[in-house]
Length: 81
Image 1 (cartoon, one colour):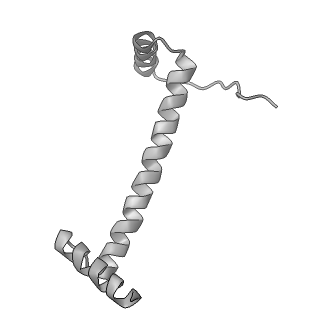
Image 2: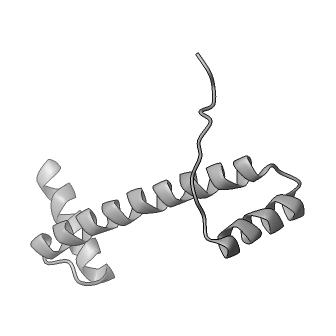
């Protein structure tokens, strides 16, 4: 099984030039620059989703600031004993 997939896609000219600038500055292939950009974007989206989930949970628990976090942690630990 191949370890890479050959892909064809379109980019705006300015994005193509920026990828070339990064490629030369980092002495990497354009494919490596694009692959890293996609992986970084994917990771950022996962983080955004996690933060949104956490924000919803915080609202349900009445957490608005650091003091509220301390209170909820203290309450949780007290119930576990």
